[in-house]
Image (tube, rainbow, N blue to C red; front, side, top):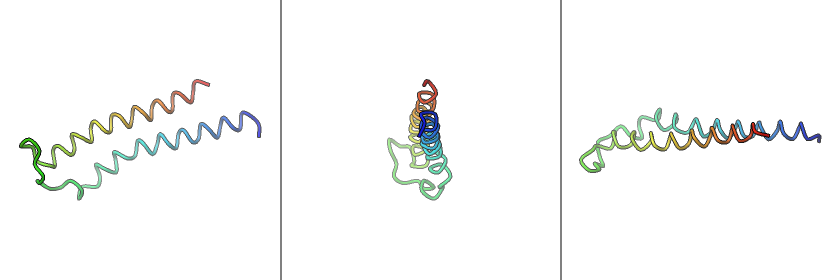
Length: 76
């Protein structure tokens, strides 16, 4: 296998991994049944709101990792 074929395969895996990381928050947000409730309450905030707020932070981290994976792979 030539090195260019190996690099192309490596880029493909990086893009697939980045896409999976980007899709995880979408699944969490679209699965409404998992957070469509009031209990448990955390610091007086209902579950519905703090669940979405936590996922905002998780989404930011996952998308940053996905971007790093893509851009690190393009340096070579």
